[in-house]
Image (cartoon, rainbow, N blue to C red; front, side):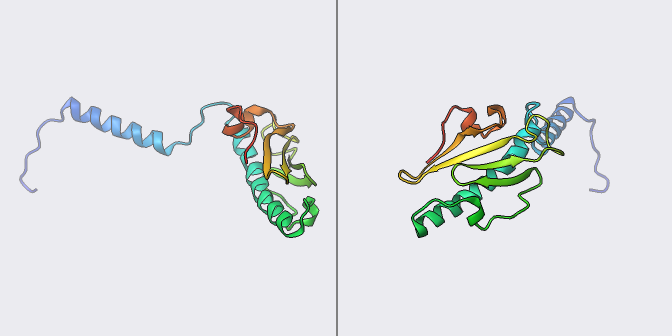
Length: 146
């Protein structure tokens, strides 16, 4: 490399570097496509906790032949960073904390219910969390999941 002469920088090379840089920034930057981003991220914690609860409810039902209440399951007492607590005995609710949470979701609930006869879970229609903060499946007008 010593003694190698470099020619002038061509505009095409500069544009290529800028395009690569913009692509790297776009990939590494978190997507914040709407003002609802913070609320959705916080409600996702409730969805995660209800998904964990769902597995325990199904296992309990398979073993005991009945649907349990939250107090019969081994769930953490302090639910999460944004979720204050889990409650219910079908339907089940994750209640968002009232402080330190995006104001439109503070104190609201996300509810899921289980139909033991069919094994179907309603994961979209219950609770007081607005639809715009619920999962993409719910926002796409799917009523729940099996």
